[in-house]
Length: 250
Length: 250
DNA sequence: GCGCTTGGTAACAACGTGTAACGGGTCGGG
DNA sequence: CCCGACCCGTTACACGTTGTTACCAAGCGC
Image (cartoon, rainbow over all chains, first blue to last red; front, side):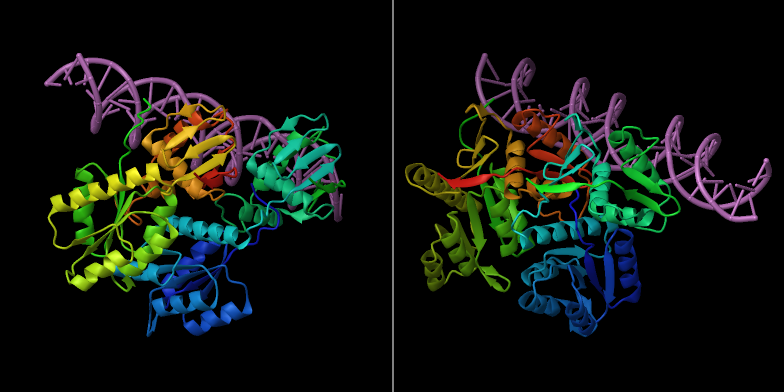
């Protein structure tokens, strides 16, 4: 289901409590996003001006400044999704969060998984509304007789038989097609897949998972998996898609 | 099985006082309707988008927001009957309520029986007028040959045969239609369907019930439930309504 | 040749999902 | 009041996917 060219979400974490800030940034980074800590409105503005921000996690209580005010200002000036974070669970506070236009609201202490779920929800909502046009990749790739129809996420063998690839195998194939003839390290592949795929943790610990993924993909699209002609190994580096794939629109 | 007949009224209870909200929802539920609590305009919109609403009980005083304004907006945008509820009995206020198009007006504290009587009156009036004249939340959705008539809560197969969906299945279908192409987590679906108040934060105790609900809906609207084309699974996330549904008025 | 590193892969474990089967709950007649 | 039909959540099991571990072979420098 992954599409090519999905960018890693950049999330601004605003909280004046350093411990909380670290905890949240840590967690978000472990789950495949770029987390930028900030403690003051000044820092928020700086980040908004200097780089793309996809989502702001905004604590309601910020020293002298009021998170609600900031949120209100953000909504009027820029169109950045905001999730309010608060230690207060009082109903009226919750309401106040919605009133100023927060996209969601979460109460400390929260379940990390819940936070992640909401972040994803808000992000996907934002992504969808920002590009009304179907951003679906509608290309069709052909290589060595094989056909990959990105529109329908379907792979056809040279004989025309549909081959069942798992989601992750699909994602790998897409990544390779987007980087033909370019050797990719395991880390690069893992990073490309984690953004696209399911829940993920991009750490240095890639292990052998990519090896296995490659092996499984080979077993499905290589005539002789022992002697790969399409997906070759670059010893000491990683893997490389080493045939020409022609693109065509559907 | 297919009980054509009176559908249970779905009533949105809008009040910013939690106690009042609970009292009213409790009472309405005990009297055979589905009562959905809401406290802000945001929640109102959410409910109007995700499911059929037959009547709105709207408190005049809503924190910053003004119930009258909301009512006015509702009347211009959608045609949902509204009963204004107010602690103010001043005549001019009463007038203001009618002026913005409320179908009735009731003053707190009120006699529960009186409330029920007015609710019934407004509902039956709405039903009658809807059968005679135009409007109502009467969109009709069409997708993959299927037709969902929101007005009669009826689903027709591509062949034109009526399919009996349970209430919960209907609700799921409605939620999905309101969120086409957007992946929904099990929690989000449960929250959208559950009448158990806004347990937004509380427990993620959804279990497998949504899975089963999805399976049951699939068995009724998918040609091959094993290979769903309409209601797809987003592994690690939830489910997604992945075909285009065209809306049309009746 | 000898070691050391790197990659292939079988076997296993962990996890998410589909679904059959069961049982409690509700509703509407007899 | 009971009975049967239906709705719906729970449980248990099957199955596919994916990461880990362990072992072996291939490559490479000496």
